[in-house]
Image (cartoon, rainbow over all chains, first blue to last red; front, side, top):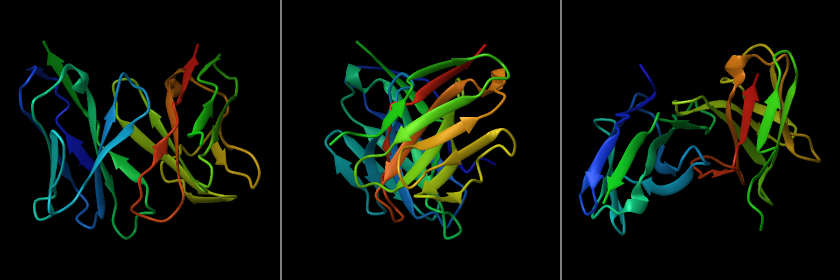
Length: 112
Length: 114
């Protein structure tokens, strides 16, 4: 089983749509969680951290469910510029040296 | 404040040659991570270094690959006797240190093995 799993998509949505991505992780001792964005295989860029209480940044909302080992990202009012690959990222548990573990990414294509 | 600098951006090698990829972390960052991204796949952790020390090399292939981060100068990822399967994007990231931290990535080196 992969340490971090995502549905690779692609998700094809019209502008203005709301889209949700899901991610599961296998190590229950994982400590930190992030969503990164990667455009056209350029360098990944941090989109937002994910907290148990949930957090929102403009049109983006991230949620963490530790009991289910599940992370989500919700994008409201999709823009053409949101087209990218979204990477679910986890920092492992106590035996982990702090390295980031990436999911394979979910591709989003927003169409006019 | 310059970001993480990687060079070269593109590197072409013939099978059997050596590839040397360089990474200069952000100013003030002493922790460096190397990741590899194969075509159509996600980023895979390779190695984590702190100045002059390898902290975690659990993702490094056992043969042909090595990494260093000397006291002075950039971090180097070295691949000896490259094969076509080594063709990938290699990303370096840095952080100031500690756990639960965000990483800052360089633009990557695209290695193509002919």
